[in-house]
Image (cartoon, rainbow, N blue to C red; front, side, top):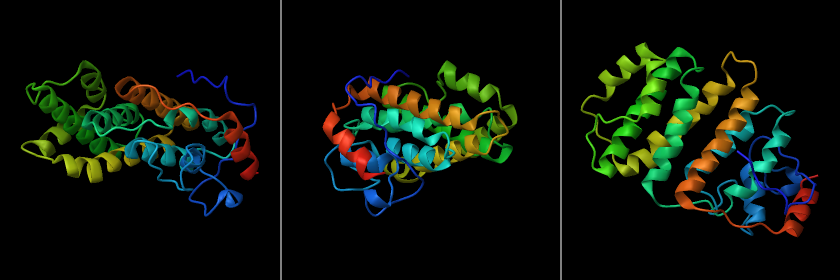
Length: 228
């Protein structure tokens, strides 16, 4: 993803793990976003889609201290990026699950395969397609983990999930499993993979939702100073 930072000064915030009472105590990815959006200081601001914000918080917390500063360049495009369209939730889950499937531990692969199958069936229902009409991208991801896929197919046979259940429980659980799976995977650079996941997800949401809101460069500098 290529984020346009031309309107943002060179100053960068100091991001840290977890939730903070105020900027002087530190700031995570979404807390900084809340300040830029002019909202009450919070790691659950209204300016960003809830599931995208969940992913951002997880990536922030599981990224190493050395790599976390790079995440700041992804903050501006999440501001104003929100929607009630269920397709956004499903797209976020699919991106997370398909990305983590090849590298996650075996026990997580089952959860992620279930997430892919469930998400594809929800999309098929929204689009008026047959429940077993799975996208080529998802099928390729599932083919990489045949044992987990067979288990997930048995587990989800006849399963029905409500929109409310997907948004409140299944979606967030799948995203959490995916980010944790990448963070703990035996790969060379989990930080880079988590960054790329968040960047690609922001791109996905932008294509569905449209452009995010412009930020005030002066407020960016002010927020950076508060977190130092």
